[in-house]
Structures are given as C-alpha cells and as structure tokens.
Length: 441
Ligand code: DOR
Image 1: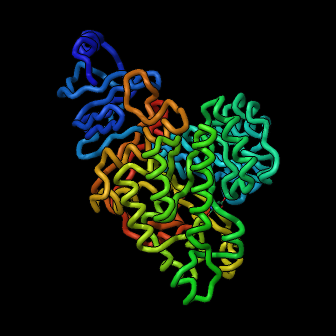
Image 2 (image 1 turned 90 degrees about the vertical axis):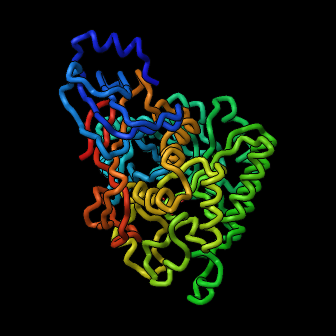
Image 3 (image 1 turned 180 degrees about the horizontal axis):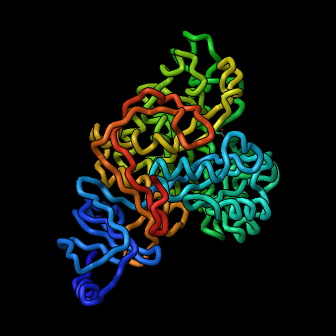
C-alpha cells in the first residue's frame, strides 16, 4: 500500500498535514493490509499510509497516538431507523448521527419507514438537507411502494436521481410477488439493491416473539421461523428469475442462512445482513417480559444463533447492521403484547461484535471489520469502507482491550430501548473521524 517513491516525495516536502494517526494497527480488509502504520490526512483525504518509523520531518496540526489501538475504515451501518420526519421525539437525523459516531460509525443508511415514508423525491431531498447538519454521512433508502402499502411502486427513477442507495419497505414485507418482481426488474437498470424485510404476514400475524418452547411456556403468540424463510425462498427465486439484486435484511433463522448459502452457490445475486442482537441473544431474553427484547424479526433459539455465527464465519452473511430502532419510553413501557418492535443498536454494535465474535474466535479482526465496512460499502455502491490514498479520511480508532458496561441512560440516541443495559462489553471506540475531522469524542 505504501509507495516508496511517493514517500520520498512527501519527506522532501515541508508538508503540514492536518492530522496524523501514529503507530496503530491499521486494518483495511479490502487491500488485506494489517500492519502497524501511520496515517496522514489532508484536506479530508487519506494522503499517506506508511509502515516506516515516524520522523519528525512530517508535521501535522493534530496528532493521535494510536499505539495499542486498531485503526479501521469508518464503520458503515447499512440499516438504521432515524425516525425523521415524523417521530422526532424518538430520534432525529442529527441525534441519530451523534449516536452513530459514538458507536464508531461514519456512515449510516436510514430506512424509509418514517411518517410519512420516504417514498418520493421531495422526501429524499428533505433527508439530505437534514443530513448536512449530521455528525456523520447519511445515505438514504427509498421506499419500494407508495406509502409502504405494498401496492404501487414508487417512482424509482426519481428516487435514484435524488440519491437513494437502495430501496426497501423495511418494517414491512413487500407481500405481493408481482410487485416484488416488478421492483427487481426495474432496479436492475440502476444496479440498485432491494433490501427485503422477509416476513409472511399470514404466518406471523398476531405474534410477538419467536414461536417455540419459550413462547409456549409463556403463553405468548409466536412468529414462526417459517414466516421469514418462505419469503427468503420467494425472494431468492424472484432474484434468480429477474436477475435483480436482493439484499435480505436482518437474517434471524438457521433456515434463512441455509437458503442464502445455497442461492449464493447457484450464483443468484443475493447479499444479506444480520444484527448484533440476532447473534447475541435468544428468545430466553423475553422470559423477563423486557419489552426492549421485543424485536422484529424476533430473537430466535440457540440453534439459530449458532447458524448465524456459522453464516458469518463462512461468508454467507455479508454484513452486520444495527437495525437501530428507537422507541419512546411511553410506548415501550406497556404490556409486552402492545409494545412496538425494535431496539436501539448504534452504540452497542461494535462492542457486541468484539465481545461475541472476535473474542470468541468466530471472526478474525479483518473479517469482522469487513462486515462493518467494505462489504456494506460494496452492496450500496458507496465510496467509504476503505483506507486508501486519496479516499475520504473516514476512520475509526478502537481500543480492542478496553471493557465497559452498557448504560443506556448515557446513550447519545434520544431513545434508550436497549436490552443490553448492564452487559459488560469489550472493545471501545476511541475516535471517530469523518472527512478528516474528529467527530467523536
Ligand atoms: O424491530 C423492528 N423495528 N423491526 C423492523 O423491521 C422495523 C423496526 C422499526 O422501525 O421500529
């Protein structure tokens, strides 16, 4: 990665960099770079990545001593609900971005199930106007159908022209196979992925948690695994038939992982994500009736968690996304049956990846970082997710050994609905840098 000729040029110039990050373990999954190195930033761009001993001949206005730390491309969350417009009491694009940078994310992809939904060009423009004030980069997903009603396709060309990076009716499935087929065929023209929330509403209706032993013992209505899997199977068939790109959101069951693994072998254009809660928790968490553990798709069984870890390890699961879903205290502090689905995740995702996947040797550091950087970047055709000369200096610096206790009351997010309060996590974000500027702490 470091070019000796270029290095010499730099050493011969009295160049003053804006920022130097010295002596950290730099991991860039795309180029397979994993070494102790210095990074120099100027004009918001990465200008030099060098493994040599730092000399005082290179000056920098600001210096970060990264010894003992890991420097990675800024994390990208490809699935978050920022609730603006409509539910600014729960989150705004600005507060969501504060939560994101505290969690090490430099780019966040916001889902369109706002009130009203982001289903037209003006709504996309609204998001991008608000995004100008945000602490990190915000990219917008547009809706597949008008009003997310599952009936009539949105003006996808308009959405693309306004800058959406994918389309999705997330929060709800696209129940009609005909509508999904048309969407896949249309999106092919733009190489745009459809992020599919896979749920057969006939099978899941009335369910509040995973259907199985625990739901039976608690006397609660269940959402069976098959409600997810039949839709995954349908979308894989439709992707194969149309040649379109489908990205399966929040994969939660063993059966889904198996279907996607087979589809990838057959060359179907499918990618997928899972969430930190789906590789960490099981339906046992619902036994306390903690509504913060009520999420859609629901927390599944140990067998599913193990299958998800296997899918992460063998590459079936491409990315890890938070599905950050803020909800107000008033709405969550009700009987389990009546609480909305969702939990916040931006500030715990990275610690859960380190604690549950890296430290338990499910993934290596570069594998884990790839699922939070270059893989979502490729899926969404973004520029970020890489440490590369002349690319934006979006970087996250982490202390891999630091441990901390999750305290939702200290979250930067407006909402505190996390089931991880009190959990001890390893791996802490020390700095988040966007376009060469330190935005956290
Ligand atoms: O738990 C969830 N909450 N799952 C979804 O798909 C939507 C999300 C929300 O918007 O609250």
